[in-house]
Length: 284
View 1 (tube, one colour):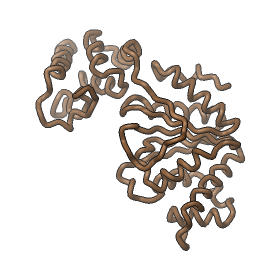
View 2 (view 1 turned 90 degrees about the horizontal axis):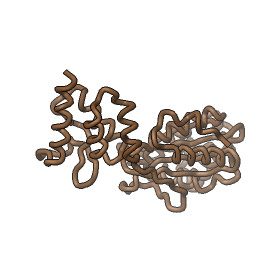
View 3 (view 1 turned 180 degrees about the vertical axis):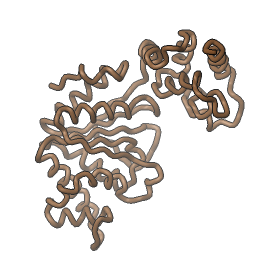
View 4 (view 1 turned 90 degrees about the vertical axis):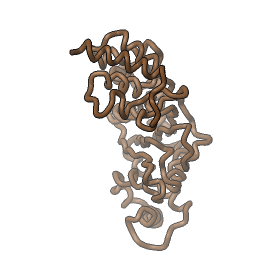
């Protein structure tokens, strides 16, 4: 079993999540498996993907990474193209029919448009070919932004990894529709940090901030790691047009970027700003 103790130091309050990722790598290296991390924006899914990729590489996995891109959702196989690129040598070793199906679908070759199932099968064959020389971890962020064709390919592969040495680890936001169909795939919900862990994160990153400000930031950020860091960073950083401009703000019980609002801040938000302005005086 993989020892997760050596890769937990940078992620506060994520022992359970890191243990789950350690189990994923153990299972992937033995018989193949898939896991999707779900959770709200900023909760730490990307950081966990990075930690798993780092640990996998240390454990001898080949790691290939990709991600959905919102402005490429209308480009067929744009997401799959990211995953196939690092495996060009394996692509050349595929049977001719599979190789041609992938090359034509990805715009790497010319010929008649391949059948959809041929591309899906060729994608699976490519990853299995790569895993024949050692365990393989496929890491995909923002699955909800994959184009339709890539989403189908990733889902197809993710449901057919048993008997291989392949792990597929992805991250997806449950509040965004997108083209990726996650039904039937194992999921792990990444929850917000506890109050104690939120305070620990802030205290480690912002040692100069008074406890009263850290506590209020922790209350408002509701355990969202990105919001915690953004709120706190705005206290001492450059102002660029406003104390919290471009940062998170709590509105209607959800965390959203402040710059999407045109109306004045609500009273609760003003209280946070007042605390941070007190800090600004304290630091001068």
